[in-house]
Length: 168
Image 1 (cartoon, helix red, strand yellow):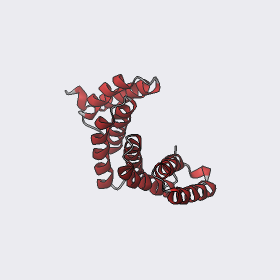
Image 2 (cartoon, one colour):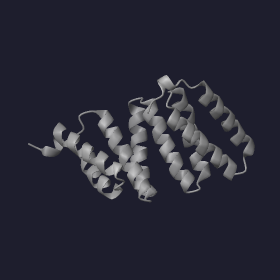
Image 3 (cartoon, one colour):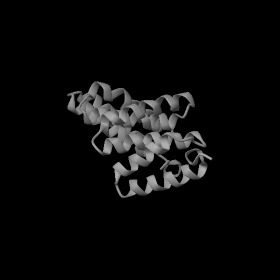
Image 4 (cartoon, helix red, strand yellow):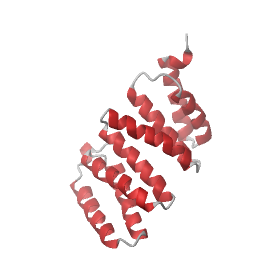
């Protein structure tokens, strides 16, 4: 019997991960996530959550270069299974890393993808946040007209949003 291949292992491990994330103990969460990532997943959503959490933890511990491979794996997985919402979130997280590194050219397509897809999927939190980040990129690069266009789209999206359909 391989404990790491059991559903019980996945369930308990993810509960521990969530606890460490809540207390912002990211290094410990990473250890549990790495164990989780090496195990058998009983469904694709657990794998997606694990990859995303690993990437976020590495970014939060100021190790964005370690986050990117997990995000690119997540991106490929979400494209394979046509999970538009998680695909957009992946793009947003990649875009944020590039924004933080001031790699604006690389950030723009990822942030734009998250902005447009998340808003069309009613994931207002992610979409509008990427819209703000996209405006920041355009502002930092002197593309004020483009920043204004994103602001207008963001404002229109926010005012048209139906809070009953919001994904949290």
